[in-house]
Length: 165
Image 1: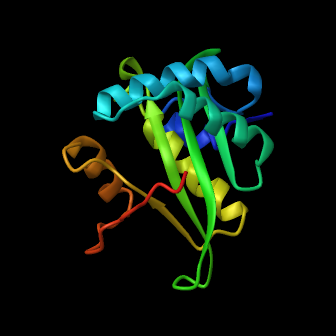
Image 2: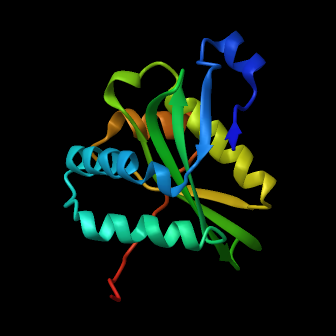
């Protein structure tokens, strides 16, 4: 299944209107793993193929917890976005998280990231989310500026995590 978004608005603003958001399926696994590898290397994170593949397999089975879409333009893969679904008492309901958003380097600066954010916000609202959260590397000023321009705010809190498995 594909989502195209608001093509009319996209054409007016110069943002690509032929970008589709294809719901991830197992047939996309290898191409998404390649994109994940590129993303992690670029961001300076370890890419462990077994963990990434396990995550994709779980996503195929537990799609009620997250959604992953492959971004394509004219049939060519341009990136992916993963949104996880959560809950927060603080916001009074559903609280979604853009777990990963990656646009291939040669598609950057052409509005693909903007369309992906628009898509994430529309999809999250349609599913009843009260808030959409994302994280960005401190050094990635280009992405930080984009998110700030789009109304995302930095918080004084620091996310912390602990691996359980």
